[in-house]
Image (cartoon, rainbow, N blue to C red; front, side, top):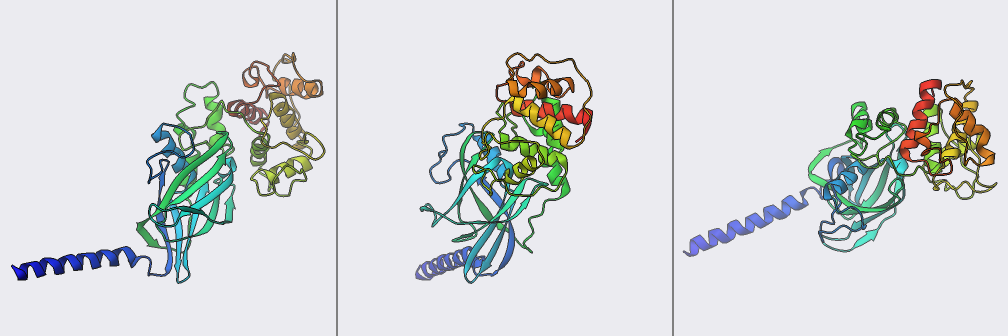
Length: 360
């Protein structure tokens, strides 16, 4: 009996030692690895959502997966752990805040991060920061422009998938195209602008607000609209905006600088642009006409003159020009309500009409 007890005790000790070794095996091996990412819209420790957002768990999880690339890079050295994550749909995001959990079920501490790479082709940014360990829980808070609110979610690296890497987070062309395909959006089916939305998404001009949603009836901001035009132009976009209210670190800053420099947009004053305000239908019409003039387009008469009831006097000429050119319609101006906010669907329709008649 004593021998059996000793044998059981020895096996238990061996099991514990093997478990400890297994847990720490990754941590003691210095190197660079790629790992799968796991996302959680629900706080893994409390089982609740932390941003007051959707009660639809599936929708929330889809949102998380659409914001974080499926792989991350972990660099393990004697000095500690450094993680590089890729944020997707980056042009829709601002005020990104990252915090790491100090210990399992412990407190979160904000960390400083650096953006080491941005890509306009797949609308992403690679963000690098220190963490206590490779499998630390990471909390991300950010403002999502199309949703008009802050979003909070969690993610971590799956260390069981660790593979030796050369710091490579590249997405294949196939993956980029799959993420851009409009067929995945569940909230545009049957929408009046469904085909136009699919067109601009598949051209890489727009992104979804999550992996499965586009939010066609959400307002389009002035900064977002100018960014779409910059992408459509196919030009190398650079420069720093001179408007005092345009943060040079925001995705739209070089696009606003480019558009203003080329006479496509003006500010609301000499010093302010108001980039996060909704673009109105008449403002969108003016900007598209100015964009066409910049591109040397000879507008043709594609439609009868639109109703001009309610048009601001300073917008009249360009609204009429956009209407005759076939760019704006009663449908994409909310029933000729020119001072109303243009939705993402409205702008998709205007852009689609412009490209149909005049290219990009």
